[in-house]
Amino acid sequence: MCGIAGILSENSAFVSMPFIKKLTEAIKHRGPDGEGYWTDNNYVALGHRRLAITDLSDAAAQPMHFQERLTITYNGEIYNYKELRLELLKQGYVFSTLSDTEVILAAYDCYKEKCLQYFDGMFAIAIWDSVDKKLFLARDRFGEKPLYYYMESNIFMFASEMKSFWAVGIDKEPEEKMMINYLALGYVQNVSNKNATFYKNIFSLPPAHFAEIDFKEFKLSAKRYFDIDKEKIIKNGDFNIRQLLCGSVINRLEADVEAGLNLSGGLDSSIITSISSKFEPGIKTFSALFPGFEKDEKKYISLLSEKLRLTNFFTEPTAKKFISKFEKIVYHQEEPFSSSSIFAQYEVFELAALNNIKVVLDGQGADEIFAGYNKYIPWYLQEVLNRHKFKKFFSEKKHLTKNGFPLNWNFKNAIAAFLPAHAALALEKREFNKITGHHFINKELLNFAKGREWEGIHKPIITKLNDALYFNTMQNGLEELLRYADRNSMAHGVEVRLPFLQHELVNYVFSLPSNQKIQNGYTKFILRKSFEDILPPEICWRKDKTGFEPPQKQWMETKIVDDYVFAAKKKLVQQKILVPNVLNKKTNALPAYSADNFDWRYLCLAAIV
Image (cartoon, rainbow, N blue to C red):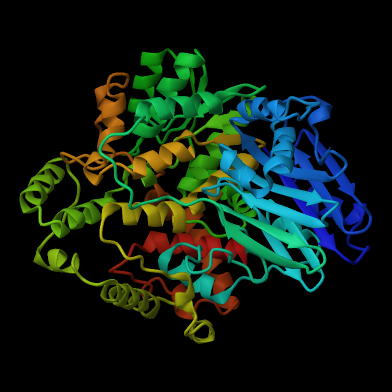
């Protein structure tokens, strides 16, 4: 796990050690264990900040060279690199290190871009070919590791974080339509253009893509190398959930430094903790507690820790701590974020770092592939209705209601289930217009982006549960959550690994029928059944878990946060993003929407712009 940066240009003033050091220095927090730079003094310069995880020797430092032709700077981990190394040895390749970096270079030399199909891991890769004068870039399948770029006529720069570009003078200018989308809807991803970011002229290589830049033509050409087949459904497979997930956890525990675990008290992190403790007895776990809050997880965390005889370390985030660290969190996140749960996650990774842990396993990704969120339930019921399984529909609705899931399913919902996609999109547009019209966004800003604000909003065609899961996994949702985790962990020099995002496991889960994911009133049904024998039933079959959830509403009502929010609104009014009326608390009534969510967005946006 590291921070990477690089530049490709005809201008020798940019292809220099001082310039590449400036790009790389801005992300030094991602790699506190070492730094490395290389330039050919003609076309390219590469930089690297090292967080030493695999092969801690100096021989594994980057940028790394291979056969006097290839040079790499790389961020991430290839978990199956030992197996790949054995295969490449059979083909005549010789290795001088025990690192996964050298395996990537040999695999690229052997298979070119097809090497990506062999990798089980998370990665952002940049390889310069000095013979073909070509730069190769690649990003992992789900977007665990970031890769941003800036490009103009004869300059191409890339980096792990956008602050590298700002450090060398690139303007930090938010895109108006993305500001409106964030203020109205709370997210910043542009589903219609996955290259787009919150800022003008700064772009992201999408997950599951590679790109090449031929120095002669100086054009970027990107291609997708991985996708999920959401149409393939099997009743029985060669593998099972338990076998695949255990293998993924074992691979992700592999490191030359001590590993730990994030433990929230929910199903996903409890499964990973239970598996890990069998292979690493006494492994440390890290949690966030909120004493007095109805959603505090201490009961479940203690239950599992006692069962497995583990030592749990915990932090207690508060409104006062939140305000004291907010600017720093925003600095690391770079783009706006959705809620204060980001702060809780930030605190947990800081706790791991304070206990000298460099690798942490986390349960993120399970909700998107196993249908863990309540929002998936209507889509599942729609699928059942679409297949005219009315008896099954009423049975599932009864079970779900009994288990406490909020269901307002009536005749109107049933009719909407059969609406064509364009009708559903019209309803979503109307809702968006209602929010922006009701709220206090400056009309000049709305007019500036008029006709363009819908570029970042996309309604997928959903006829079955897998359509919704695919949308959140591959198009909108998961990548944003992965960005939060990457920035929060790397802010403290900690590597986060996600066993649920092993691509063979993901493909397998997507191929299972929907009733394996939601059944008898339970989400993530097959995951619960696969591990019910090793989990306390109170955790395995609980229905109220949503992740690290702080008492955000209570925090927003405290004077220290309220004053902070007022100052944020005032700044946004001065910058003509909000209208002055937003400062009047009596007129700032939001009967149809959650006021604290909007206040959160003001707070976040003001800190960024």
